[in-house]
Length: 460
Image (cartoon, rainbow, N blue to C red):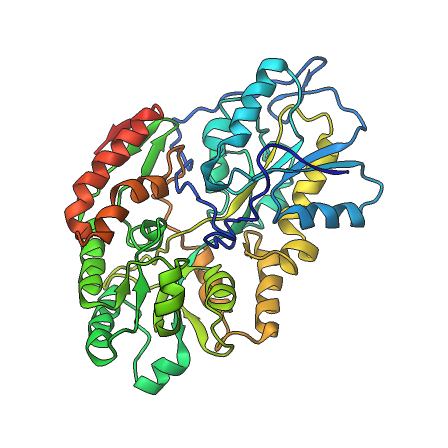
């Protein structure tokens, strides 16, 4: 049975992040916590019993498995039902917590008060659900016997960091949104340009493009997720979660100021846009003039192929640039999603079987999922499908695979949304002509206020 609850599904996903179609605001926050972080112990309902799985399980039954999904993941649940007709399922569509709606958290608070109503498995477009779900006793510990070690070891390096509290895994990552460098290969070849491997080369090329081919772009800084592309990749210490309710914020560090300065220079020269890749202005006036574009894995399909309608055999990928002399390559991340298993589930066997399948299966993740799978084996199948599709000008496999294991771990996954903060603090000034460097102190103040409002202790 399929039904809808709460807000109507938006059709948005972190895998694709289309503005107005697939954009879902990812709270780019951290739960890869220090050893001192303690997680609340979930409790079961009546008739619960202690088990080696690290929490009190509810009395188990053979009733229907209740799965909450957004509209983009509905096909996954329906496919699982088709492949497993003997499994009784109640499939519910909801907004997937898109744009930080907090629908799931609000409903869990209600279910906790009434002692009933919890779904068995939930998909969320947000990466920070564990930041409240563990303390609320909602999500079950997965790496204490519920999900096999072999399954957990099959995810990309750090993929499940947003789900991990004090060494315990409380959710599974659906897809990754690691950043790479997208570029127009025919134009780069025609103009004799070399794909930059360092940020210094990237800036120099941007300056050159502004002079030799005015109007063409080497990037866009106009979206609310711009800090996740550039400042996260550049190791800016604006968002380092150090405990369940502790964050270190230092937007004045050298890594922050030099990346902000790079963006300011290219914006001033005209080779870096401030429109936003999903804006009408960008689509109409700049979509055909993209030479380079740092961005997440989903840019290939969602931005170039679907939104900008860039013809086949033009767009290629390369590794994200790094600062000269930096021997530890890092990239940013713009989205992804997670699957949570309720600690109150009365159908744990069916629930864990579904979670394992939906995050690792080639049938869904490898062949149908829109975003880059967090599972390495499914990702290989997904990449093979992209290559077979014939859209890209080069083989995108190596850059995406490498970047999947290079997301900088010191940019965190707490409760407050960096995208919301950037949208309220930096974006208006950027639009009015202010430099990003000049707004770094205001950004720091805003992050501090947002974090404190969510109960975080802020250090600098």
